[in-house]
Amino acid sequence: MSGNEAMAEAAIKAGCFFYAGYPITPQNEIPAYMAKRMKEEKRVFIQAESELAAINMVFGAAAAGVRALTSSSSPGVSLKQEGISYMAGAQLPAVIINVMRGGPGLGNIASSQSDYFQATRGGGHGDYFTPVLAPFCAEEAAGLVMLGFDMADYYRTPVLILADAIVGQMMEPVVMPAKSDFKKKLPAKTWALSGAINREPNIVKSFFLKEGGLETHNRKLKEKWETIKNNEQRFSGYKTEDAKYLIVAYGSEARIALEAVDILRKEKIKAGLFRPISLWPYPEAGLQKCAKNIKNILVVEQSLGQMLDDVKLSLPGKDIKFLGKTGGGIPSVADIVKQVKKLVTRPT
Amino acid sequence: MKVKFTRPISLKEANTHYCSGCGHGISHRLVAEIIDELGLREKTIGVAPVGCAVVAYDYWNFDVCEAAHGRALAVATAIKRCKPDNFVFTYQGDGDLVSIGMAETFHTANRGENLACIFINNACYGMTGGQMAPTTLVGQATATTPWGRNPESKEGWPIRFSEILASLPGVAFAARASLSSPKEILKAREYIKKAFTNQLENKGFSIVEVLSPCPTVWQKSPVSAMKWIEEEMVKTFPLGIIKDK
Image (cartoon, chains in turn green, cyan):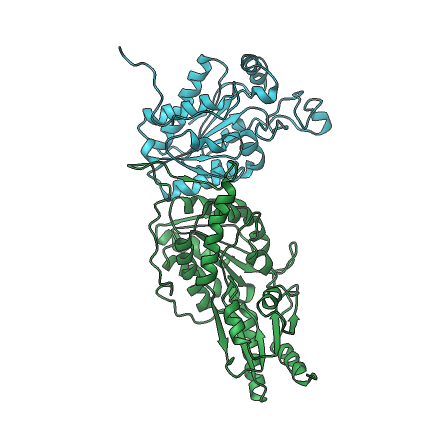
């Protein structure tokens, strides 16, 4: 199945009760799949009139206490930032899938990783972050959607799945995980709107007009972001133990880099791959440990260099090289091999 | 002695933040009275707008959800679809419902969502200091139409949105009332009750537009504001039932 279908089925398996979305390439397989499956499962599917409506429907579904999902691609996710900011403020859990395409503007429909800044720096207005999970294959995409729902419910926050067009469109065998690897017990949604029977009314809101009210609220949110930073840094490594040349890449680009590592190893060049899975929180501790004794670091992205900033922040003082293509350009296996070889031959 | 008049259970005891002569207090009370009357308080989920009524939850004694500006009906759509046994309504102003939220309003109505929508029309943006609203009357001076709204200057005409919505098959009930006199307030009450009952009977989308005074922005006394509704506003926004399917 395609990465898009794997994510949709994973949402069903995770108990997602509500989906709303608006057509945009390259994620159209998700609403098509959900339209069919949600009906079969007697759950709610709505084709919304816009991405704005879709994300605000997800806001409503989350406020009502059910698991809710929306999906889109870059230009559509820009529109959704309004609702994501409101959900972060109102502490509503939901999963938002972004199958990235080229930008800025209407850009194109080819694979891209140029929404990294938007995804990892809050994205909408206000002082907030959202957890961001980046899959590199269809099966992992499924697992991360399940994990996303659990994280969203546990921390009461919207969670972004940052996939790219290659991960979304690529067809491959998938062993659907039964559930996510999230171990913590999920709290009851006592804050949800269900009707004030035998309790005081519940209010879902992000508006704090009284002096100091918003500062107090935002400081509480900050504590939550710090907890997430401590608990949820996720990454994977490939042949990093004895690596002298470390490639850092995520999503479909990490898939490409994996092959480059194997080719370089065959030529006796000790290359390894560090692959962040959580982009926020950035797995800086893991990267620091992995890169401790490595001088040559190459960041590879389908962008002009966005994750590059986080690698530099994680590894201060290190000389970090960058290889990126933009606007639908994809650094190939050959590109990466060539770039690493340049590092091999450069004078130290 | 028999008690004839009390505060509805659905209304909290609170000091109002609304300006003197504002219509929100009356509309909040009408909503609360009808929810009490229909025995709905414990299954009600209200959706509050962006605008002066954003803090409606400070007054209403039932579950309330905030919504981004214009998106109340998108939020309400999802709540009602996920919780069909709950009673769900939105309470929105003219800028929220007819301007920034026109798409959400129109499409929610067109889907025939089983919702009630209370549409407060005061012909201006109250909270932000009295700018031109989509419902501002021709000739009406506002912060952004200092010489009066002039269609000749491409400032547009007041939009009769309830009539437009009534043309959609998904709309079960559309009516316009006014808060300008006790008689009209009782009519508003009747229409709101009809809209709420429609949802209980699964009839689809119901909207009640309420012409409501904003003396502060209109720069009128509370009494002359009511008079202005009766003498001016109703010429553009005629009262009565527009559609009852």
